[in-house]
Length: 449
Ligand code: NDP
Image (cartoon, rainbow, N blue to C red; front, side, top):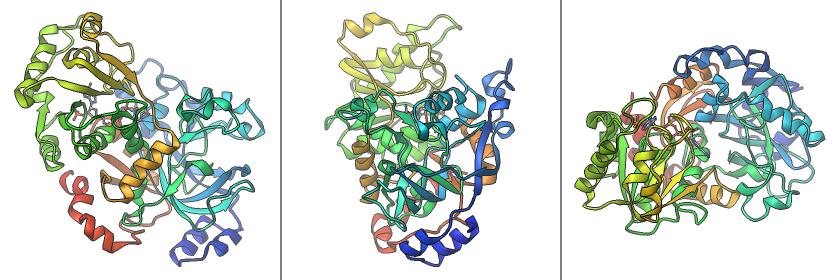
């Protein structure tokens, strides 16, 4: 029986795919998980006071059996996404309900219904085993993993797989997530690892990068045209930072909103000329808990016009309740509000007159289908989109990392080292890295504390 240490040594020594495939898999491995019997522990506690360090445990978990359409990946690095925060604070619902429903679907689904939930929806690593039905991947392949978990025998998954009736997010609505030394994923979640990046730089992109690609670029959501102006909330955050890059790459004009002078400087460094510091501006869109203040929406609209001389054609919306009314208001006639989240609250209120009278459209978006995730990964492989890694934690400190994201202390992405013993490993194409530019690749790491 190999240990995960043996696996790491084999990978580090450059073992062939055949040698890796011949390594026996361990019976258990290290992972970050929440426990079903702790799902009630936050009752009566305010969201902001819920501390993920108390609910995210790191320990040994049993190696699950591999289904024919799956692969085992040795996870070198992973990353924190906001969904791990939601899981750890058991909001808006406990994720054990998702696992129970998946457990009822099939023999393979039943493996997921456990009293612990291994979290994490990003990862980079090396394929160790392939199930008998896997054709396009083999042991030894270096990969990144996207989180769209779909059943390819479900007809509803064959137009846009995000419309599949049983579409799920790996490591959030399924078990065996990426914040672990090993993971099992469907073969159709794999994408090639960008050769010029470290394990942790490669691991931090797939979820946020693909989400922003669909929201801004894809015909399924924003479908941005050259020259369009886009208001981007949280423009140095996980999804916001990739959105800025796609708007710039597509010949658009990003107007980025952030909440500190440091973030404003970072945004300018990314090439976003038009920046609003929402803290400095002191917008108060909600006069009290129940009433919004339209004059504050107008003030934001005026500030945008002051910067770009017109209204924005699109708003990249995710804060939700706190900003949605303003987002609808400031969108240009005929423009669109693309939403994928509601960090500050999902019961949204906006003035419908501003929507219908000016023929605006609200478009919903959620992660990305395989083709979109692949295109977004290709943009990273080509050096056209940069990873936004700003911090790196050890797997043992997953709770600490999730707390920092929960408290809005992280710019870009927080990476997590799993099997990778240290930062900086995994670069296979240093020449291309130099061509893309070390400064560009490490911008967030350098400019944040
Ligand atoms: P981050 O924490 O990395 O960034 C969010 C940013 O939003 C922050 O940097 C902050 O920027 C800004 N923000 C937070 N609260 C408010 C507020 N009340 N008003 C205005 N701005 C605010 O998170 P992510 O970017 O990774 O995710 C953002 C949201 O999107 C989360 O709710 C997440 O769950 C969701 N999401 C949804 C996905 C999907 O597929 N549907 C995929 C990925 C994420 P600043 O303070 O600088 O203004």
